[in-house]
Amino acid sequence: MIRQWIGRFIRHIDSILLATVLMVLVVALMVLYSASGQVLTKVNAQAINIIVMMSVMLLVANTQPLFIERIALPVYLFGLTLLLAVALIGDISHGARRWLNLGVTKIQPSELMKLAVPIMLAWYFSKRETMLRTADYVVAGVILLVPVLLIAKQPDLGTATLVFASGFFVIFLAGLSWKFIFGSAIAFGAALPILWSMLHDYQRRRVEILIDPSQDPLGAGYHIIQATIAIGSGGMTGKGWLNGTQSQLDFVPERTTDFIFAVFAEEFGLVGCCLLLLLFTIIIGRAFIIASQAKNTFSRLLAGSIAATFFTYCFVNMGMVSGILPVVGIPLPLVSYGGTSLLTLGLSLGLLMSVQSHKRLVATD
Image (cartoon, rainbow, N blue to C red; front, side, top):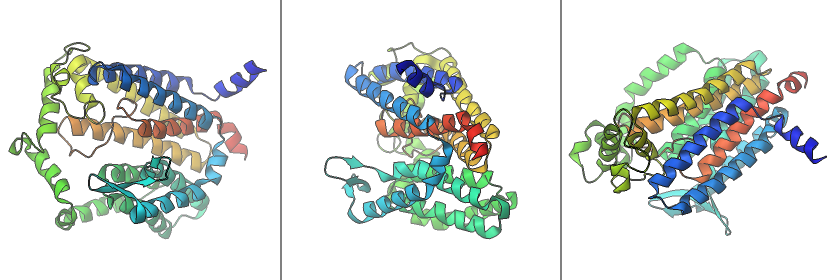
């Protein structure tokens, strides 16, 4: 009986995704142990986060995509309600209003929207697929921009960027015209002076520091300078696990979260970075394969968005740490310390596995 119950759950797990994710998580715990100063407290806490993530992934993998599709609108509206509550009564910390105090705990509703937005848009386009018109893309744009603007106002530019990307990928995969994309890019370029004037002072400072970190080496430019020193000092094969001087001597800031890639690069070098990139590429490639094999529009758009968003996570974090993108506070997926990001990734991976394992059932619903 127990064996049958376990077998029923396991059969919905995608072995390629699971094996690759587990390899990244093992590497993540090793790097976290080094980055935390060889203190087991954070490693143990992250191990618990991983157990929660894997449990959520398993549960979602055993949930039919049809159920996810049915709850798309309620989940989106619930997320919007929470974002409005944050704007009105949210807790202020470090100059930002991002958290909602529920008494027993605090939640960050913007994290929910990383999945609620693409699920909602995938649902919307699946309902309109036989009669798509320009007006439908306008409505989709409104569905996307409302939560993005609410999150950006907190302000939380990093999460707003990820929510925008996750929703945009759904709209793009639904057949958004390249003419519109190029036209929007030109309009965005023309509006840059206006957008620049709307940025907060600290956001403008991040862009200025990106161009020349040396103008404030002990202040705003410190993060990028120390991270690039750590990456460069790793050389071809790295200094070895636990032997990274920049990280062990506490020069790399936020080294267990946003800048953990600098610690990894210093200790494992270019070879280690290439292997980590290979693992990420396998995850992204497998996600796109699952999307291409999906049997209906909702599953295809959702899986494709998850794949593209995971790539965005990796690209933005590594670009930020290596100094080619502004610092926006985006963690390295599966590697950075933190329970919230792992929970979101667990949900995303579970959705991918659900699409893959239930594709025959989806086709007949």
